[in-house]
Length: 193
Image (cartoon, rainbow, N blue to C red):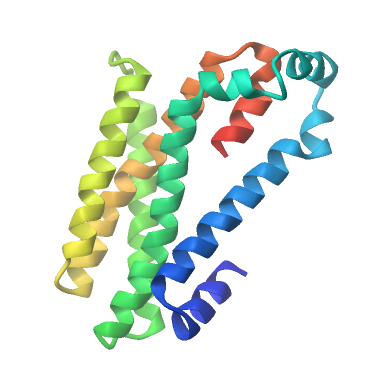
């Protein structure tokens, strides 16, 4: 339903409406996931539920992982905005829908390459510093996407943007997983989601 919703919003509303709707859907989805009975049904949930009651519904978990959750949220919002940017950019430059697919494919390819390279490196830099650097580089690359003069350049810049996506999200998960007790890891991962 996502591409359909983007198409409807681009045709019927201002681009900012898409950003607001996307953000609202992400907040609603994350909240629903974190609070769902399925998360509580995970093995070890009884001890996790007791832990949750002691820490006020997971606020302590969220405080411990606020940085990675914020970074993951920023990456998610950026990806939502990029979808809209590409659609509007293609329309304004009189390109068809197939152009949008190629540009988004460049983003995905860059993310796959970035993820594989990130996994292949034996990092000595602490994860929190890596996350800050990855999100800063992602922000700089996004600026380049906003300044792209043509569709080919936009596709190349989107590949660079993608190069930082998987490593940033993976690093956010790793930090969240290491920052909490074993019985709270599912909740921490859900917050990063």
